Length: 365
Image 1 (cartoon, helix red, strand yellow):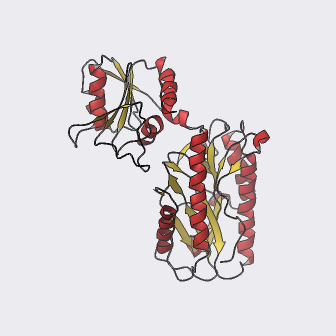
Image 2 (cartoon, rainbow, N blue to C red):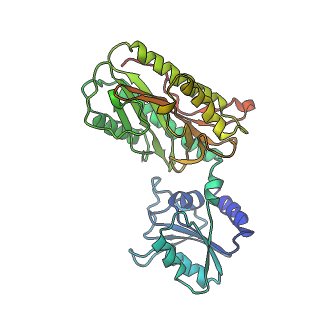
Image 3 (cartoon, one colour):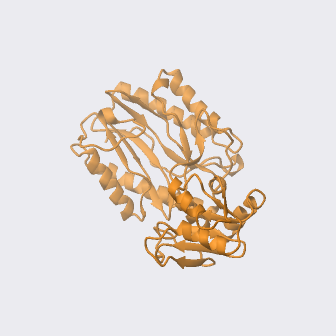
């Protein structure tokens, strides 16, 4: 699998940037090589591919296991830069051009790589690997499906516990512990728990505010399983039957989310998925409170292409996992966010596959 991915990249680069390729972005290294310790880089050479590591790989699932077909080279000095060492190997093997990920390297690191050999010319690899990563294979989707199951389990257990009086921070920490208990390598991103006037925000860092009766409670979390990351977000009402304004707002956001989910299909323009949800919320007078983007791709990173936004270019493909996460926040009152991870599928295959299955009914907890 990893060899096939490297060969596709090699073929893609052959015409534009013939020579060696240096992969330094961690998610791209994992995609092409299986993984390695932090700081690991991958060198694709004309005759041999080498994984350069700052220390011997541990081989655990959290950091990934290097492809057995690769030669693994451990740097002799713990403080050495694997990217600079890789450039030296490429120059020593006679490469005249080295394609690098300019968008990942710092200026200082780029200069250090370029100073290794006078005859070595650096070229920009661009986002060639990120583009290869957009469409997921069966093994990747399986990892995402398991990550979603773990997140669903963690959230479901939290809903069965007593919430009133507990702080946002405490609930977020408990959710992250439950993720690990159910088999995650860790959270996919910092868990968000927002109560009362904080609820419905696109980004909220949990505070010491305590859950109170009548609050909206918005939760957004995700699991990292073997490097693959999912996302789920739900909103609930605490303690009592929801107020009329809470029901009205929730039904509106749910309608927008459902319309966007139903629009996910191969060949659909990414901006059109955003548009169907945005029109519903904007038509109800909440356009000013909408996030810039309805959703995004997920995989080895929690923020990947494609982007579902008004300015997004391109169309969806089958087997592309994305989030659909509309929300409305009313300053001083709170709001609603509903977030799912789905995989785009052909209509003949059943349409979009919902990975995060926790109920979207407005529950009073």
